[in-house]
Length: 223
Image (cartoon, rainbow, N blue to C red; front, side, top):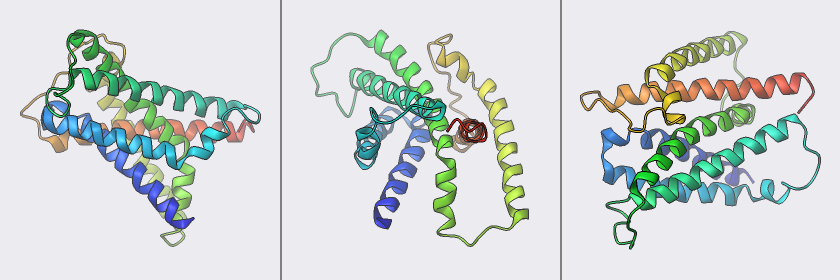
């Protein structure tokens, strides 16, 4: 059982890292982006195989507020991933260029953008909804944290989320999600590290939102 938990954690960590790297598309190049996308798809399938029990119980039991929220987010992530994969196959010029696909580039480009950005936000919220479980797993590998350390980590999380809100606006993520802008702008002189830092903090913001949604529903006994 312990080995399965480690594998799950490794797969989820790999998906998180790949998701962030995929957002750097214009800075890492099309070839790397396409192969990362294929890797992401493989990990996504593996993630759902490892969590098959959740799917086997999806039509069983009662649906309270948290379960409705969790299922809705999972459905959104699934739609975003399907949209990303379908559009990615159409747009591929390298890894899948052997496929006899013609036309549909304009539609695929729009679908890829909206799927990528909604997927990024929804996967971050999904991660936040399970943050308590991640913390619990971490405690198995670390000694019990002191109260002062716990508050220090909370302050750091709030600072990250605060900057993430600024980065969300600066990077115009909301406009991409609504297709107000149909082409992603990349400053090719910007270091990849700087770009990734902004996206890590944006992810942190929505992880925190997901985490506190969970806490509110638990407090209101709607979990």
